[in-house]
Length: 455
Image 1 (cartoon, rainbow, N blue to C red):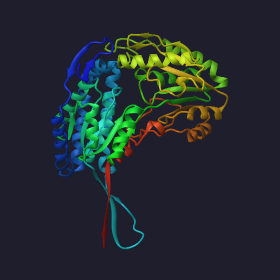
Image 2 (image 1 turned 120 degrees about the vertical axis):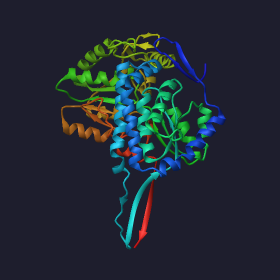
Image 3 (image 1 turned 135 degrees about the horizontal axis):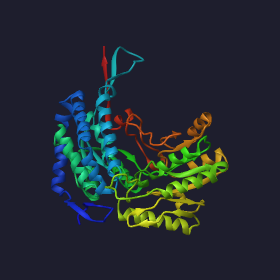
Image 4 (image 1 turned 60 degrees about the vertical axis):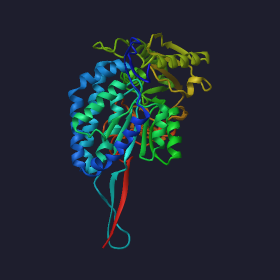
């Protein structure tokens, strides 16, 4: 089997294989993207590029059912949820099309001495390499490619090996929308070929969403060649429950935070930290909700969640949970059936337990008891990760106080699933650096060029 193939995780069937790009073809792709910088990035206006990206949004909407079905068989997402991902992706493209001229407008600087003018002009930097993951195949590409193509950069897109069909479908959408063939190029490249791309002087920046291991490797190579990188890596996001007037609603939010996409989201709630006086009630209701959620055929209507993305993913999660229980944690639920995993809850996860510092990428939650607010904050920050976080309380003053103390790139108070196209997404610590989405997502790969004109 080649590196790139569609393997249905619900059945294990190999549906289609895609050839890996040859070295000569890869060099040609880089050369084409490099040559396209002028025609795409300098010879067109921001408004013209935005109009093309608006058409990309429209085509996502028009083809959303087909696109949803593709990722259902690629990585196991229920079709309706895949369609929802496509709709959110379309909204991202539309947002940047609507706001690009404002975001990229010249920014005047008031001079402290001398006469004349000074402005910051945002211009493209050139060829960018996007290295994308399998868990949100369309959304991840949208938040990288949308703003950067409007800026005038050109894109080489290396998708996850298990997502070649969605990668091809997106490339076709860009073609059909009017993005030049050399401005957005899908490449089925190996890791060794990616290393060569990072070293290639024609490539000016790299954006990766993936594991910490992959991010560290890319950052090391990029640093060696003085390349800008944006890294969105793993997370072990705390979900802190300090107070509630409606425990059932809080548990419903917590269940959504853990079980969305079968728990395979970097910013999913993973460590549930509950103050002592609410702990027993929360654990009872949360465990019932998580273990009672039914997985099923991702192609069937109404399926709550599907299989994990691959046998490798299911194996890894199973091994982590086995070690956690061997280290003293207590597991309720979590039974495995092929690549399907029942929702599960781990309690009694103490410092020194293997799971205490790990990201569990699947439908297994960890629940911790905190004596008070201070201990809840300490537990929340006692991790190498710093992507997102959730705080639930009926005391607004407490919510803001705790939000200020959490070491993470994002804090959501009394809400889950509240990501928006206008809200910057990204983390700190081992969760990476840089931001995507919102205005800040258009600031990473631009040349903020100073133009100073004397009177």
